[in-house]
Image 1: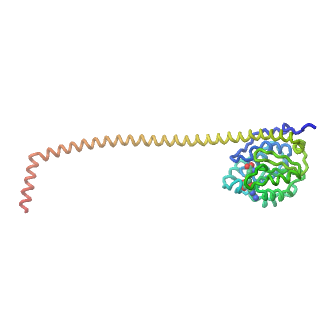
Image 2 (image 1 turned 120 degrees about the vertical axis):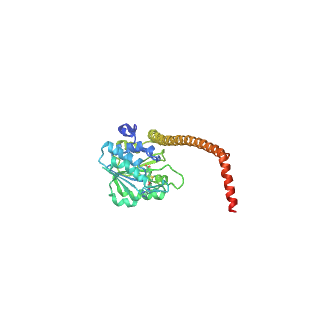
Image 3 (image 1 turned 90 degrees about the horizontal axis):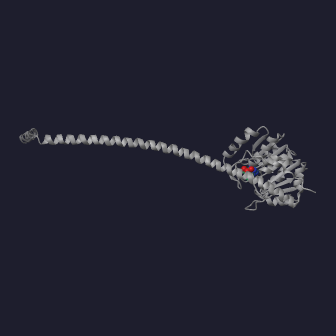
Length: 317
Ligand SMILES: C[S@@+](CC[C@H](N)C(=O)[O-])C[C@H]1O[C@@H](n2cnc3c(N)ncnc32)[C@H](O)[C@@H]1O
């Protein structure tokens, strides 16, 4: 049987993402995220771990472009964790600035722990769950098990970092357990992305993906790897443009500062010339007065005054 997976049915996977932040770790999966939304048409999306929102905004952008009737929730404390690093309030503010004007009609950013968010999401509701919180085996297992009841009968779960084997990352261990229990597909690039069908798969393209032979899997992996590189490079170009913009701004500031300093220097030089002239005039006056004094001291009248004072002081004595 021929391979019926056809990404051309979902041309949005070629779209340029509107959100490419400085956090690059998920960016290579954005074309697949767009493909997934286009193929699966989720009516309820939850993301556990959003940070600057690259993955979440890719889901939202596609939902908005396709005009899907969906509710979306991004859950995060927006404080960070030991793997992503801890960060400040500017991260959520930056995400809100991008997210709110575009997506707040169908999407909410829930600032709380994943466990606290459980009470806000109905059981059996979620068609697409993306798990990208803390990546230890225990944490990701807890996230999967506690959120499993939230999945709908057509639920699909994405796991990021299935291909990271350093430090205490343990998603790959959970993935090894789950991929044999459910229909699954794994991308190896971009730190690994696991796709797990815990419910009924309706889309013909997703069915083909989950049934792919090793040769077909390799083709799909290469296809999305190349598209992912393209997005990553777009992000890299954007970051370079931002830093050129920043350097230009600093250059303009330095030019303005140097113009101010040049003006101050010119003012000081003019003042030095003024002072030198005043000094010359003062020296000429001093020369004049000294000559006048000399001629006075040598005059007969002065000698007479001197003699007068000598006589007056001898009479007093
Ligand atoms: C790897 S980042 C998410 C990256 C994001 N998906 C992207 O596209 O770049 C992990 C995020 O999960 C959040 N997080 C980790 N454990 C959490 C928990 N138990 N409850 C809420 N947020 C959590 C952290 O604050 C961090 O922002």
